Length: 139
Image 1 (tube, rainbow, N blue to C red):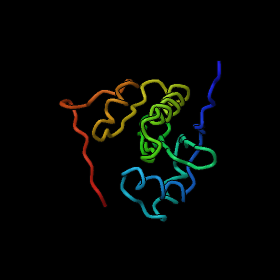
Image 2: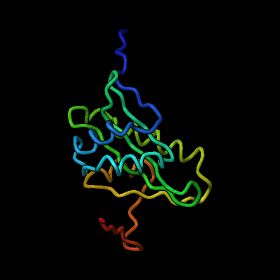
Image 3: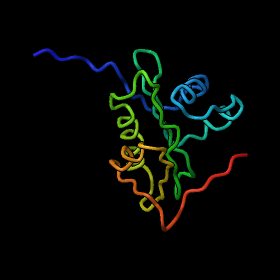
Image 4: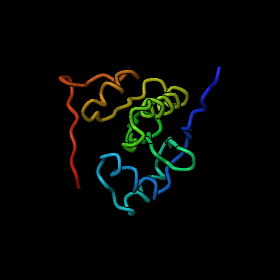
């Protein structure tokens, strides 16, 4: 039997600023400024970067206070690499680390855009409505 090696590696870590600034808009997320990325990325509690060879093609991060509250953000895969289970692998890395290190009872939240909710449900996330409603404000 012939086995085909996996061309993707999910590496724990924080994406480089340049990677972050490229991947977000390439995957359909809003662009961020270099200044914002440089301020925010070091505050990542845990991150994951998907590599195809040496090229980053996806990422995800957990941010939060390290004890009571965490939020999963920046889950994205560039379009030409979507549909290969990479979002699921990113989530598995992030949720696995939360399960290992986050204190019992910590509140983990995320915002599910469109059909991404089906991916997040596979990891135990449930809608908060009607008990609570996610809200946002841009500065």
